[in-house]
Length: 361
Image (cartoon, rainbow, N blue to C red; front, side, top):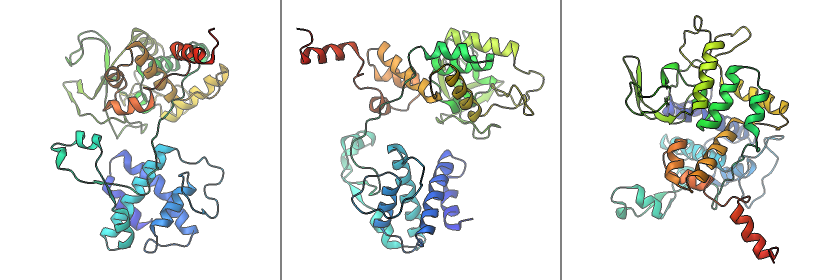
């Protein structure tokens, strides 16, 4: 047990941040051990060198390789690692360990227009906290979509009603895999005029439950409650007729009603854990196997979410508010960053390029 890291992580007890920071800190503490450095002698340049080793762009010699055989961190992982390291060493500085590094990490920047908009009386702000370890420069993510016709091919290659339901719900609902595997039966209001009174059409309530038996939890943490057997609140997502059909097919043919006492929607269908909640790793592996059988390559659950959101943007004429609510984001900023850019396969985009190239003459 690393006592300093344990004290820091206890500040995030009961949240997903604690687990994420734990994985990142384990890697960093192992690197410190290899470099024979203690927490009291680490400098800002050492941390910048570590960030360069795991994937950041830094102008300095990095020394010996680290994490051999593993891919470098992406932009989001680098941002999270930078926040984790800054928080960890500021916590140590508050305890009297390596105060010089704590002061070096306590840098500030001028507030941006977005910062002023987010805050009440934003004109009063003169500075904002900055992280010298964070990745530099603008960032635009390009999502990896499902191949054309992937849904039909996957439905033809899966072997059970549960797996057909998985493909359909991920494709039509835009659910994250943790949200889907974390659903309980009481979360599903699949008839018109449900008792919750929050949506007239069939829908589900995505509720954050950190204590699920399969450890699946929704990323969004909207407040919810259960009263008289009816769930209200959470993230409300509309349900398509195909999703309702596959649900009833699964419930009437495969769901072990007498044995599943945990109340969760998805269960194991075979093996010694029959009737136990189905974990996200099981859903991921099922999609991987189905993708290989359908000659689609590696299929990941988040590809369904990317394809769903892009289709929503196309159908709504690029309305970020509709895409935000359909996907369950807190703001339109993420939608704009990932999806709201010109599709290189768009017809109008292709026609404009061909006109410039002179191919239409």
